Image 1 (tube, rainbow, N blue to C red):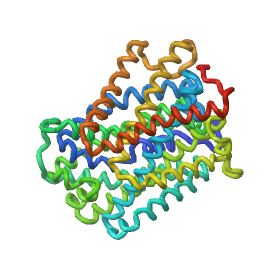
Image 2: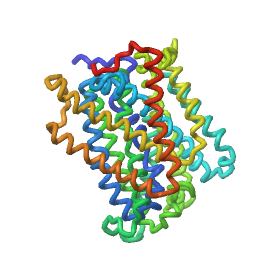
Image 3: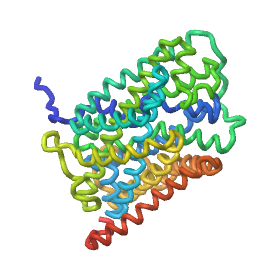
Length: 443
């Protein structure tokens, strides 16, 4: 029997699943603040409900649009096809900005977990963060295959410590697990808890920007997304059960106080705390490399459309990767590491929600403009059903934003995020002034 041919130099399903897992999740690391915001039982409830309301509509939309247009540029190309070059620019610009905030979180998390067994490293936070940023940039310049292989290895290192943690937490007698509840949770705390869960479940569309570099992309994305979603929600729920069973005070595992390594040390001793901390470091590196892979492709296609300077299109002469885009992204992230973890999460979600809304509108528009076009995967809903489906993530997004507004501590990040959103209008005006022949109508 002849062997099935695979496209040379393209990402396969197993590696794609690992990259998507790291793009979206990377394990429960970064989830710790949730327990402090809403308590153990509230954390369980949000982890059960939020993915259904926030992620499922997003995943279904991404799968349909990617099956319709499985090409490099992903969400940018979808919005361009549906709404025209102007809104495509907004999509690309907002997503570029949100991903910078997202990327800046991971080097900060790396330092937090490394500090568990090397406390002195916190004194050199900026230098360590810069080392991660620029080593990941080098890996991405080498190409998508090295990123995929490294992602697969790191995923194993991320999951192993939690298998030990879960096993020990459930074997030994512990605190009883009550029904999930948000009792006694304030509105602002609920909003910040929602932000934390939403951040730990976002990025499904990011993995589509390099669809042109994936072997059999429609089939590969469907299988890989299903695998990544199952692993992500499963490991989050197990982490929440482990926290509850341990009886540890929710404030004791705040990410600023050591996070899950503190829980590991309580459940299994110092060795498990170190192992969990090492997994957190692997998670931060893997997430950074995977997310950088996605964002570096967006400026490339925007520059092709004369929306960004042409030099951003430059490909490395040997590795054929958008190395100028990778380097430019790394410069911006090197500045954003000065913000705190919680501030970056708030900014991240606000910017992400704006871009995601355009993807929802793009799917509705393409259903109307090109109803007969081939879609190997199609959401089994009509227009009214899709609108009702999209009200679910809109409701979650609105509740989180209102809760953050209620907390005076987050007004600064919120206002900065709104300013970043408005910057798209200013930059678009400048682009139109420089290039008045640029088509602004839907195509």
